[in-house]
Image (tube, rainbow, N blue to C red; front, top):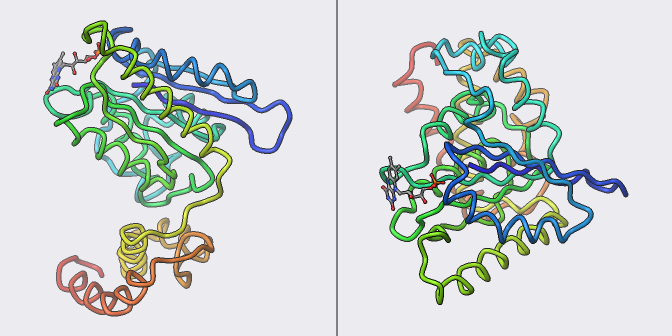
Length: 270
Ligand SMILES: Cc1cc2nc3c(=O)[nH]c(=O)nc-3n(C[C@H](O)[C@H](O)[C@H](O)COP(=O)(O)O)c2cc1C
């Protein structure tokens, strides 16, 4: 896994930390070489790279206190602080994973599980993300899952790719795949200058589902409710002011009472 944290916006001493996690410096590490080259050619980027396997990614014990009470109530909050601090400090992130049995490695999943509270209380709307899965092709599930989770945290995932790992390729294929990886990395660097994206159909619907969930679940999860309320989201049409997909906007008016009724029928306390 490679997680990248670029640039402080607007400053002349911009910084880009990059976190990379993997079980070894193997194929995924090698496949990141063209991407690293592009990043190092951009002097305004400071990149930090971390292998998740070398970092403290504590097991989630399932107490859900991060969700119901707040992230600082997690029994392992102090241990995951390094990851948490880097996530907050970064402007962008690259997550890379080899495909294991059709999906991301378990440590990537563990990383996402540790920060589930960001799904409930997303906050990374100013940040961009790139996803790289080695052995892409038919094995898209890993890339889709990583992208989806980062979007739920608020990241704008501007580049997502799945490529065969460079060390296994025949010589004549290397320039083609290396070139593709470089172009993807360049597109990612360019995307760092872009503002927040408009609310696409699925993101708007996702926002509405959460809004109903948080509103009806006020008594069950007041932490979520207070956060959403403090952000002004309970009255807003999206997380931030932007153009909203008009079809999703209309649909959400129709969907809201249906979702409310379904959730009330389904969940205790709603
Ligand atoms: C436990 C395990 C499961 C794997 N499962 C798949 C798979 O489902 N599909 C696939 O294309 N490759 C699979 N592979 C191959 C790896 O994705 C591939 O070798 C990758 O480049 C390894 O990256 P790494 O050297 O960074 O660990 C698997 C490898 C391992 C060790």
